[in-house]
Length: 182
Image (cartoon, rainbow, N blue to C red):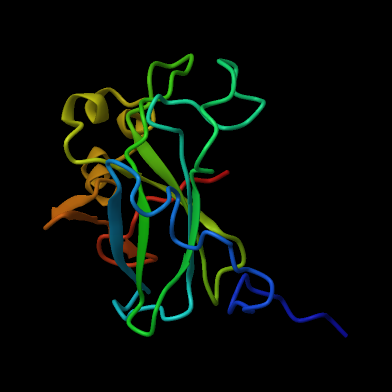
């Protein structure tokens, strides 16, 4: 007899709550922005039980981690957030814009790294959210510039939405978000 395969969701409320929830930076932090959107499946239906995690560099492009070769970023926010989607597949993360991150391939444009966990996925999906006001940095970004189909870069760039940024995540189908194999 074989063991049934397992997926990475649905999620259990006792195991995944994050103390700061959707706040990568505390409420009232200068420059706080909201990145929000809807997670949709291959047929375009909202995914009501997904979990969105983001992590990022600080505004100076440093990580609050001992492995950052430039030294740890300033203490304070953890620059990590976790937000479940609601019944309409919507999520919202509150953060500040990170700085560019240096690398051997050239600086990475300011971005949030996003992990998507949901029912039906055997592994988490990883993508990035880039900022629409960073046109030159986005053009030079070593990840965006290496996409096999450059026209798909638009699935990684948030769009202004009032005082917030909108970043919809499409798991499959038309306009599928670019995900990275890690």
